[in-house]
Image (cartoon, rainbow, N blue to C red):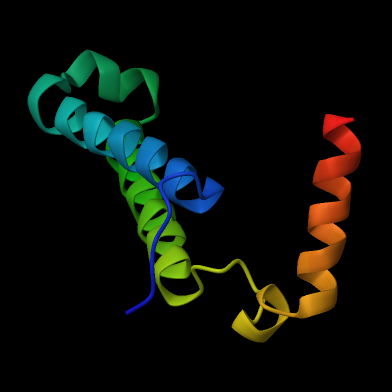
Length: 95
């Protein structure tokens, strides 16, 4: 099972866009008046914007679930040279 990190930018962006999209959909369903529709030329702007944001949020979440390592192969993460270089950088920053 692949692990999903809450610190992954795709999860954060997907969550924020999803929340805003759901809010716009709710506004579209419960607060749209004829006057607001006239301002936007008869287009349900909140509805379409909300749907687009929810779709983009779903794409971000699916991307994060399918590729949780961010494109790095598990072998590259465990490569002894990569691990040694990481430790050297960490020791150099601490000193």
